[in-house]
Amino acid sequence: MTAQINSSSSPGAGDVPGGRPTLVAVAWPYANGAPHLGHIAGAYLPADIFARYQRMAGRRVLMVSGSDAHGTPITVRAEEEGITPQQVVDRYHPIFLDIWERLGISFDLFTSTRTDNHTAVTQDVFTRLRAAGYISVQETTQFYDPQAGRFLPDRYVVGTCPHCAYPSARGDQCENCGRTLDPDQLIEPRSKMTGAVPEQRRTSHFFLDLSKLEEPLLAWLETRTGWRRHVINWSLQFVKDGLHDRAITRDLDWGVPLPTDELGPGKRIYVWFEAVIGYLSASKEWAATIAGAPEAWRDWWENPDAAAYYFVGKDNIPFHTVIWPAMLLGYGGLDLPTDVPANQYVTFGGAKASKSAGIGRSVPEYLEVLQPDALRYALATVLPEQNDTEISDGDIIRRVNDELIANWGNLVNRVMAQINKFFDGVLPDVPSPEELGGSHAELLAKVDEGLARTAELLEKVELRAALRAAMEASGEVNQYLYREEPWKTVKVDRDAAARSLATSIQAIAGIAVALAPFLPFSTERLQDVLGVDLTVWRRQEVPAGRRLDWSAGGLFIKLDPKALDRPEPTA
Image (cartoon, rainbow, N blue to C red; front, top):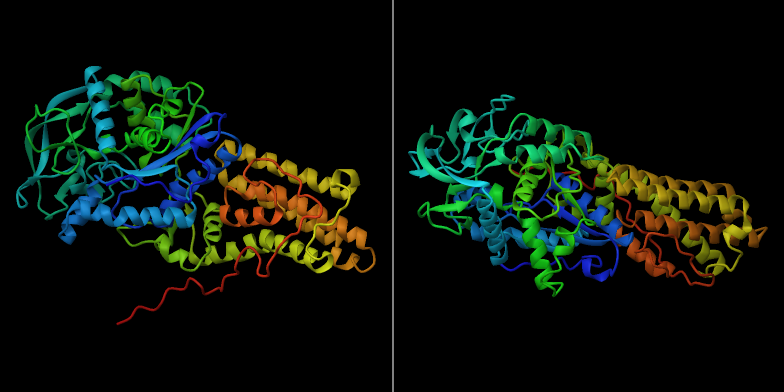
């Protein structure tokens, strides 16, 4: 499979000559089904909002991810459908690319773990860790399904979690409490393939000696500041409880091959070890194939001035705050994460969104009804940054109609429509709001303060609060208009109406910048109308005399309250 870049990407890492190199590393989705809103709100939308802001602030952003092609969910689906794992990947990878483009997720590269590049980088990490003494061969027991006649990967073993008693925990991790597991820890384990009680048989595998990396990892974690409380507390406790060596190979025929055959045939590097290496391999692939400078990746990985942010869901916290940093420490010379702003879950009717359980619609279903910015807005208001958040189809419609349109959309449409009606669509030539002083200058000061506050929150990856700050600035303009009433004053004092509407346009230009990371599609339309650059983080003056070509209908389409009603099931 060849790597692909999202055609909707914003100006990429190579387009800005200066600025801090900022890696935006986004969780690699299993290529076994279309993503649902839980995935988008958990990792992909937050990463995109943050990356878009960083680009606007002048940072050299490299945003990478790709399809995780070797996860057990792919082989499970392949076996269920009687097809090859590669056929599963080939079906869903293009779906991911289509969704990213339609939703405006601006990857600089979205690739796959099936590339030769990823294999080479993974084997290099394996070889270097082994040479440094952090990978060893150990004999272990592994579950074997006597009915299927094969060893079982961890995710093929299910049972009761020993920590929280969740009855459907997987052999690698409990989805309920988030603990990483080994299959032999499960109570009453059973084979996911046949339901049989698996046997334990001896086999040799390569292990990552995490126990040797425990002390430097803990010392590093204790220096982290500004991390989300649930992320740092969970990570510190995980390490303090003691790290155990963990097998990084399995008896599989699907996965990255080992660079050595000393353990005999039928072994592959296991997905939990190689998937996180994808951030590094994707960066190298971007440098070689897109930037045309094979060594350019080093700016983001071997640079003390660079920053690296990892956007994942809470079930991926241990792999990104413990295991991947441990691998980086063992490898040596590569930058560790600056922050891992892991999100909690989005729930629907109190249940976690899940592809496999059929909880929550797929993204394409929503995009059949909603404009992409409308969906982005609704999700951004409930990003689960500190706690699980609940959303429903009714909530989405209400947030679009009663917040996005009622506040921002109607503001823009009202001002544009009045300039069209009263001034022939041309921005009136009046003194600047600063020269006018009074309420006009006060309004722009509040807008500029809102822009600065939004930036401050975005820097801290407090995205929900940043969106609120931007929308509050929009609310200030609405209040200003209600006080000024240019639709009335134009009848008795045309100059006063011109001042009010011109000031409102300048305010809208500033708020559009603050909303740009959240609403890229409508912002692009506004940029065309206003004639100023909305891709840099500062308010710019819209020139007097500018013709504001504005068609009826506004930025957003108001939703019918029943627009997302599910059809009645047919017999």
